[in-house]
Length: 253
Image (cartoon, rainbow, N blue to C red; front, side, top):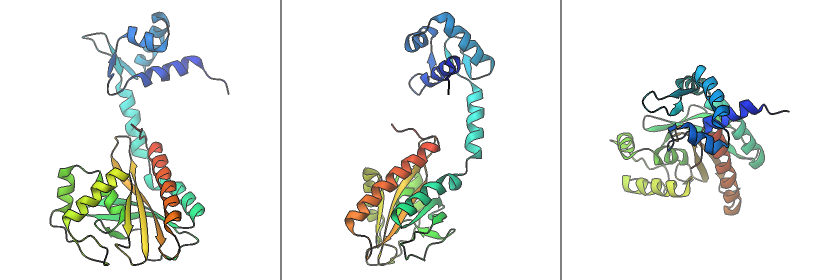
């Protein structure tokens, strides 16, 4: 398939702008692109005509135009995270034989919004729409871990730390320590904290604004999955979480 050079150059120009370079002189663009000012001028004027590039009247520097905001909102608004996540969850379940979930935060609880049943799994307690205690589930920990201190405090205001198993975290200090560990590891564990005999792993799903908007999880039976297998599944889950995040516009830093 042939590459249209002028289109490629226009896209490369748009990619030059970032948080550190919100405005650029034509000389800076010329240097980074390796193109003459005359060639750049035509491309910039075309982008400007269609609203993808704007020019600051005070200093003459170029900046991204409002058309990109308009297009971006259109893309984000039409994205269905559940639909996008389903292929990742399905692949994980097929490759591991385990049950996978997609969960989001609703108030001070997590909620399953998608589930793929694994062929080797015997976990029947989960269902789409089931609400989850954030202190006792891997998904819940992930959904809390990357909130700001203020947001997390609001979620946990008056929260009841119900004990489900002998392993459940039943106080705020223990949960906050687990959230710190989750951030450090980039995944969360539920080690028989919600259901006896069940271990779960969860990873964050990031959006285009680098915010965690959901979590992917994989559930296993301790009697069927050993530590080595669980570690392998964890890496597969982390890869899937990052892959899904990138389809939502997330860029690794």
